[in-house]
Amino acid sequence: MPTDKQTDYARTLGVDISHDSYRVGAAKLDDALALLDMRQIAQQELGPGVKVRLKSRPGYPPRVISSIQDSRLVFFRGGGGAKAWARNCIRVDE
Image 1 (tube, rainbow, N blue to C red):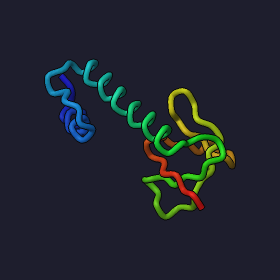
Image 2: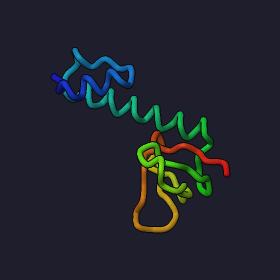
Image 3: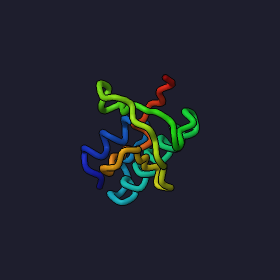
Image 4: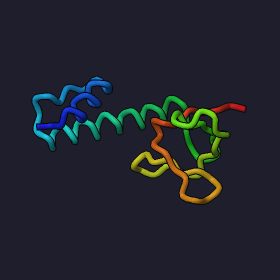
């Protein structure tokens, strides 16, 4: 069975995994998060050169996207391996 933490998190994403096995629940969570990433990329037209702020760091300066992997992981210019999931990026038009 999925853990209570998984079940609660899935509920915040609008997914019910309470009656699924642990593996099926994890797969449904992965699918829901992938869908969020894909929607964010499409709706905000995220891509290389676009400035974004991170939801988790609202006070930090905007970052510029250098690339987006097929896994929907967004990398930023400036090196250092800075990255975030697309669902955590908010486009900034300055």
